[in-house]
Image (tube, rainbow, N blue to C red):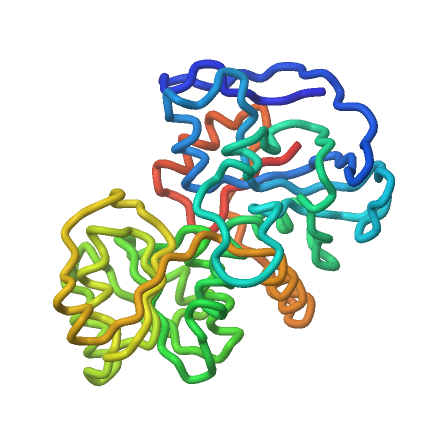
Length: 334
């Protein structure tokens, strides 16, 4: 079967299109899935750029396709089902239960940059009705992260004001889901063109953080000095100070990314005085994913796909993704 593997970890051209042995028939508790689509996420670039990634590793955590065969004792999936990947195969429900990616396909174990996967059935969720394979693939990371940040961690409700940073996959999903919940949305970007596209997707207010670097003050102006109920922070250390400025007293900040680094100076005094509830969001569990699928099927929400690349052009897709030119998701089709 055709696949893309990481042949030269940490180097400029890390990927190689190759043939891998067919994985065969599923064993007890397993399914065989024909993969038709994937999508890129920030951690994919980290995996491909790390010199510690094993030679021959198959990347990509997003994956969707069709079940070709099921093993003994598999009951929640059947041959012919359209499915997509679960990010944490063993985190079924409840609060945070894992702090590593050791069991995550594409990171700790081989991922979905290949035509066929034989894996435990618990690794897959049934796709929303009417979704294409690529649309379903975007739910594994971006869709679920946005859902968990808004609902399980953010407690979003109608009338809330939500601040979203940037126009990447998670933020655009969160924009759509926040509007679905009846929230007022404020989105930031360094691109006026992207901000206008965000308006077309339903954003109530937009802020160019390049021309308004103290964008937290602008959020307070837009909210009559009350501040936002929830801020979804994708940057980490460089953006958290403005997120803290933007949020209301007793509000919430969900940290869903570390685009500006893994550590830095944080105004802890402001967190204390404003009594902010600050929490990290690491994708989500199976129950949350099922809730997301039901919300999609009940609303008709569809993800925003910026560009599509064939699997053989995964390297080019990654370069486009890391350029920051995209709005929404960058897709890979097999």
